[in-house]
Length: 230
Ligand SMILES: [Fe+2]
Ligand SMILES: [Fe+2]
Image 1 (spheres, rainbow, N blue to C red):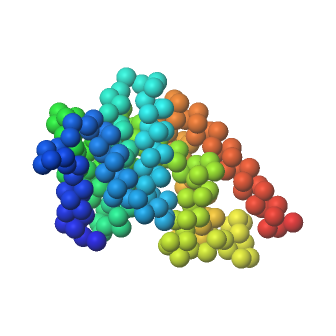
Image 2: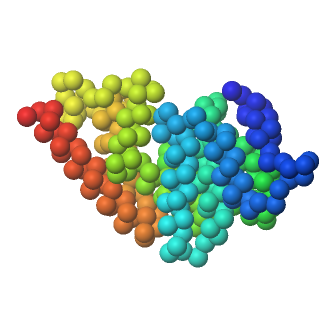
Image 3: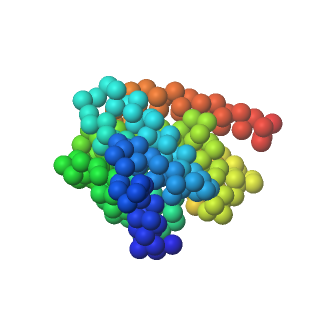
């Protein structure tokens, strides 16, 4: 699907009643729209349930911060839209473009819109940009937390499968005598990225939860090593 088709879909999904838009809270409307747009999209770990989990995590992280929760919730719901819809281009940029359209559509306060867009543009782990606001930092932390713990394992496997990666190198699963290559092996992704995420966390609560979830990943890897090698 191209970006124009996606925008058309968004506009067609307007919640109308008797020709007039219902007065519903913008975040509630956004949630409905995301559920409508992505109801059957949850294949590679960046679809509907990811958006809903990241929103929940972001709300929890926001409890400790002087922060605009609405901005964080909107950004969380929309941050991976382009990825979920498999649109071409830099997914953070394209998601931000779609987000702009959707935020206008639900009547999100204009004064806060830029903060949402900025947070979405900067959320990519690989972008390596320092977050420009506390809201952007919370989105980034919430997004990284969803790559850790039990859900992180599930998502890594799903993502690897959709990219055609093997589960692990059949002779050297834990890369003891070879270079890591997570383009080829899902297990390598734990070492190239997932185990490093806790160091990249920006919020105190995020760091604490990342440590807990990383402990789970390490226990999972230990058990896996036993099962594969013993
Ligand atoms: Fe993303
Ligand atoms: Fe994400």
